[in-house]
Image 1 (cartoon, rainbow, N blue to C red):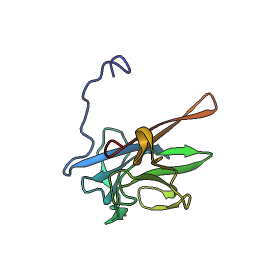
Image 2: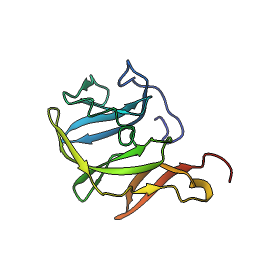
Image 3: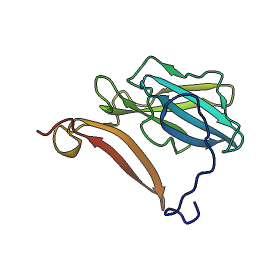
Image 4: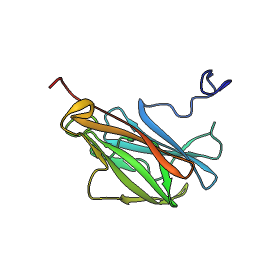
Length: 160
């Protein structure tokens, strides 16, 4: 950005070749990683690079999730809490962004990827009324002055 956050300019297309959605970028262990879904919401791909502008290489274990719309599409910024890497996933079955799951990434290198579900319950879901009656599909936690805040996104399918 020339004048953050107001004046942006194009620098580089990081990855191409597929219709990617809801990509999340993480720098970890001096390596850049991109977690991204394809438009069918059931496949999660992982790419890595030494520099943000590339070149980017698809991870040898990618796609890391295939054929599972419940947990493939990224649901927010990958975050590190007390040394634990957390990946958020939208549950897109039976509707887009029904709820958000959290997964702990336990191994992340250019050669190896492992994760497990962080909690048996979704961390966000619709509230049955109001602006997020039917779904919650994004969370962006940020640490500010040793406290955590988060922006979230949800919705309702039709007026009630």
